[in-house]
Amino acid sequence: MVTEKSAALMEKARQYIPGGVNSPVRSWNSVGMSPVFLQGAVGPYVFDMDGNKYIDYICSWGPMILGHNNQEVLSSVVKTCASGLSFGAPTEREVEIAELICEKIPHVEMIRMVNSGTEAVMSAIRLARGYTGRNKIIKFAGNYHGHSDSLLVDAGSGLMTQGIPGSAGVPEGCTSDTLTAVYNDLESVIDLFDANPDQVAAVIVEPVAANMGVVLPQEGFLQSLRELCTNRGALLIFDEVITGFRLAFGGAAEFFHVTPDLVTYGKIIGGGMPVGAYGGRKEIMEMVAPLGPVYQAGTLSGNPVAMAAGLAQLRILSGHPEYYTYLREMGERLYGGMEKIIKREGAPCTVNHIGSLGSVFFTEAEVTNYDIAKTSDTKEFARYFRFLLENGIHAAPSQFEAMFLSTAHNDEIVDYTLEVFSRYMKQRMDNLESELEER
Ligand SMILES: *Cc1c(COP(=O)(O)O)cnc(C)c1O
Image (cartoon, rainbow, N blue to C red):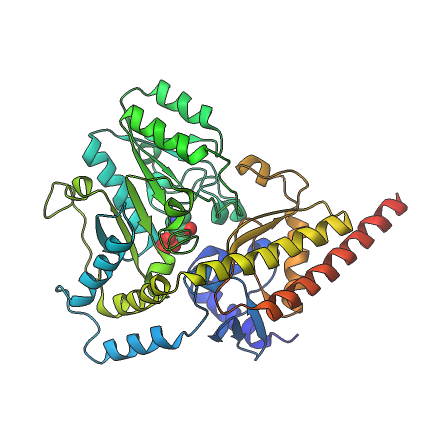
């Protein structure tokens, strides 16, 4: 596999952009490689600068749930562009997308558009504080909620992979109100509530954690959080930036039948454009300016072109509930297939998956939280990543990220992936055996 053009571009990029990239995980530092630069994509495939074609399991980290270059989304964007790229004034599509979401998702009575997941979460936290008049928030170790100051504490994938403890440049004052609990450990949340009586504004959680690899909520965990928040006068915020419109149209809340007070969206909601949103109960959302005292604004928020992409994608998804069945079936075929191979080979690996999301952890342990996820063999993950790439598979370049399926992935693609996965696992077990013999 030749990747000369990518390598040359990366060399140049490093001169002008920190680390050569505009978001750290793209540097492939954690797998010790220089990244491929992409020049195009269609359906389940991406193409790099040297003309290599890969099956894509990143899907732009989730947004491309209909596959790349969906024609309906694309034509909606192109049509909208012709009328002007931005006005900074209200437009019809903003109302249409808000109406669609509020009509289809019962716990979202009002919604505000922003430009990224980071911004959505940052705003939801401010709103929760403004609404409750309390300052502290509880988050979970290994959950990622974007890169705003107060949430850069034990924040999963990017930071884990780069080995940055929190981040430099974040004053203690910004994180002193952020309390960290253990995912799937209700007692750790109760302890924090007990130690900070009447001070906790909100519990924020990734209802399915997908930024420490995929980690599922254990039976009853989300329901218990709901009850606890209600009893203690705190808001429950579901960060559905990954799970929203993916597990179901109504996200994890719909999937698990748990009702959060506020919810944040990103990724899929923009159809590939930079969009985020936060929404929830009307009485809470009415605290947002200009109706209420919680200030939040955005020059490009609700941008017409971005809304055109998001609206087109959400209309397709809401009109095709069978797509979610399809994604679940593809997920079962891929991740269930991986589990079978691992079992057959006796490989020390664990697969966590739900619907179209999945992760292969290079640890034998059952992965239910951040500390356990960290027991994974990241060096072996790097070898696995390289093997996939050399066999035409573009997957997340980090042990602590998810794989994403789209509706453009099909049996044939999944079965090819399983064939590659099987070859890798066989080779790995042979290597492990000969290592043992040498000792
Ligand atoms: C990606 C992500 C964010 C941040 O979204 P950006 O658009 O990258 O700012 C927040 N929360 C979760 C759960 C995410 O996966």
